[in-house]
Amino acid sequence: MKLRYVLAYFGERFPPINMVLFAILFVTVHAVAVFFGPNILEKEWWWMLMGVLAVISFFFRLRVFDEIKDYELDAKNHPQRVLQLGRVTKKQLIFISISGTVVELLWSVLSGWPVVICWFIAVGYSLLMRYEFFIGSWLNKHLLLYAITHMLVMPLLILWVYTSFQPELNILFPFYVLAGLSLFSGFSFEIARKIHAPVAEKPGIDSYSKSLGYGASIMLVLLVMLGGVAIQIYLLNLINARLWAFVLIAIIYFLSIFLYIKNVLKSSEKSLRTAEKFVSLFMLCSYLSIIIEVHFNK
Image (tube, rainbow, N blue to C red; front, side, top):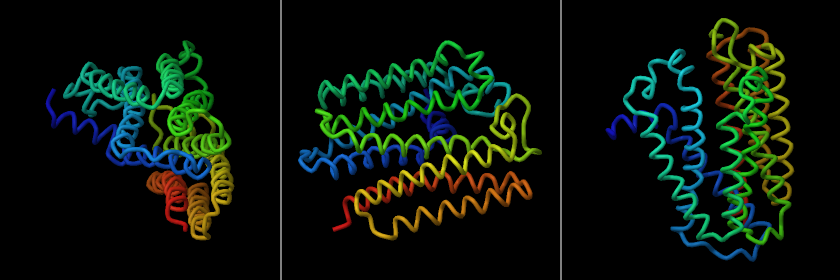
C-alpha cells in the first residue's frame, strides 16, 4: 500500500473538505445536545476527537461500500479513477475501513451501552444499503426511492452521536429536529449533484434530470432545500439565534433559486455546478450557524 496512492484516492473520492463537514456535523450534534440538555458533563478533548474520527470513519465505510458495489460500472464510466487504475485496491480500502470501524466501536463502548446499541443499528442499516436491501435490480430503476432509502441512514447516525451526549435519551426533541435538518439538507445536495444540463448527460450514468426531467429535478431540489430552510429557521428560533444567521440562510437560498431559474431558462453545466456549491454551502452554514449561536451568543 503506497501512501501517495492512498492520499490520491482520498483526494479524489473522500477529500478533506468532506471530513471537515463530517467533523462539523459531530460538533453540531454536540452543540444542540448541550443547549437542550444543560446538565451534560463536559467531555474530554480526546473523547471528542475520537468521536469526530468515528463519524468520519462511518462515512468513509459508506464510500467503500459504494466503491465495492459500483466497481464494474465505475470501471466502465470512470476508468481514470485511482481505484479503477489499480493504484489502490478494494482490499486496501476495506482494511482502512475496518481499522476505522474499530475506532467507532471503541468510542461507542467508552460512551456507554446505549451508544453501542445505536451504533449497531446504524451499521446494520448501512449494511442493508450495501446490499441495496436485496432488491437492487428493482431499486436501481427508481432513483428517487433509491436516494430516500439511502438518506435514512443520516438520522440513525445522528442518533448514535446524540446518544453519546444524552445516553438516557431523556430529551429526544432536539434529535428529531436535527434528523430532519440532516435529511433535507443532505437530500437536497444529493439531488443537486445529479442534475445535469441536457448536453452533459452521459449514457449509463443515472441522474435526476434524466429520470425525472430537467425542470422537474430543479423544482424538486428547490422544494427539498426549502424544507431544510424551514427546519433550520425553526431550530435557530429555538436556540434564540441572532439575526445574521437567519439572513445568511435566506441569502443562500435565494441565490440558489436565482441560479436554478437561470438554468431553466438556459441550461449550463458550469452554472449547475455553481448552484450545487450553493446547496452544499447551505448545509455547511446551517451547521456552523448552530455551533456559533450555541457557543458564542452570550
